[in-house]
Length: 577
Image (cartoon, rainbow, N blue to C red; front, side, top):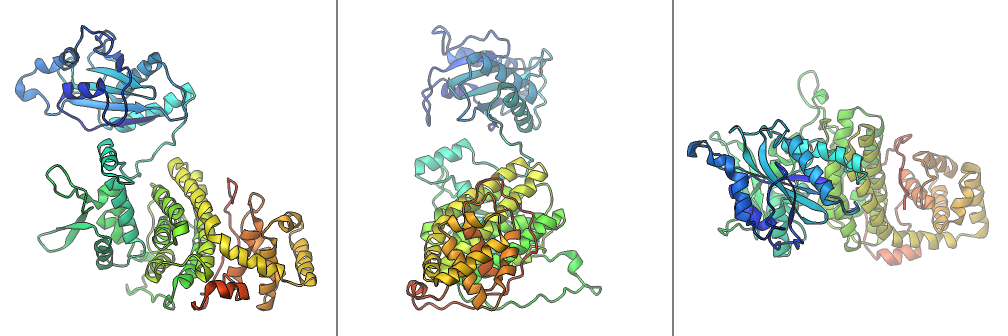
């Protein structure tokens, strides 16, 4: 059940005309009162002798008792309460009781006999609107401070008592939602999302991996946004606002949004925090230690390999690091997803974009991220952006599948981390992102896994038998299931590549299997293939005749060294692929 406190207004009659009208964006059916401040208000929806102006006079009567200078400019309080789509249809009596509880909880009518005058109108099965005049019967103004949080808390109690869908409680760190006016404007103009959400997504992509204000603003300009900077008299930059060129108000002027209103972590001061090293990294003389020089990224495949390695390190920190460092890794994981969505091939773009969009909620909590510790992930995000779009085939496609596989586990680790701290909304958002990543993986992995399976099928029978025996030896409880999977041939081919590269397949296979619980995986073979190919520094796609034909003549850089955590505490609460 979702309560929404709308912007205060000054036109009681105008709001009543809307509530009792036909509706502008959804059809209003049988508008009528379900409750009122005294339980006796006449209903213009059911009584032909009563007009909406009569109800307006009744609600605004306390205003007429005040001198003109004492009346508030905006005296109309408006709250809507909407049930979840899967909730049962509630009766008028139930909605009336909900309305009384809402005005009591928010301070509009606390039950002391001198509350505000209000009325609750129902014009649809799934929601009501409460309208109130913000002057009490004794002439004082109500104490409705933080009425939104009070309404949310009361709705959580109502959900439990009535057996309704229970909404995860928030913690005040969520980005501001688009208003109903913004959503309706998006519908009228044919936008996929409200302007606020489009801007939030674009700004997040611009900041992903950026290392300076100049780079950040250059990316905003390249994305086509209009920018206004707030400059202090000293010349220092204090903040910024952005707008979509074609999002205009009634005066045909661009509608600008400050970064802080798009999301708490998109204000300029919070963005600047991403560019600072941790204070403990400074030496005794105050200088910063030299950072390791990484080889230049020469293509999307190399960038994805480096990002996969950084993701594994992030998993280790989330599982075993302190809270501030773990929070920084989770925040930087959002940058990886933003960069991956920005550079993805067409067949994975939709799911990756959705994954990045929903993970945004998981990137913030009351645990403050200690920036600087997330440098490897942020550098990986920068590499992804600067390497450019990846092809959906060949080594690009295979390393994309590898990275999405890693990103899936990163999202699951974030969900577990938030759940252990009772951050319900963040945990749910991370889990939802994992579901989109799983779907993206299916699309990305289809071609490279087909190549690997073909390679496995070409192995000599005695070689396949040797790898089957190795599997039985190392993973006796899973061996039968793995050999029955379609991906077993790909795993056999990978084990053979591991051996030819001079590694001990038994050691690496045992290590790969320890990295997470595999019992809930839909395809254990897929999971092990990417673990093995990464830990053995193998190309994501082997240089077989089939792979060469698929990859064409494009050359990729050699794989980056990969350091993997010895263990991972990540568990998958839902089925994996």
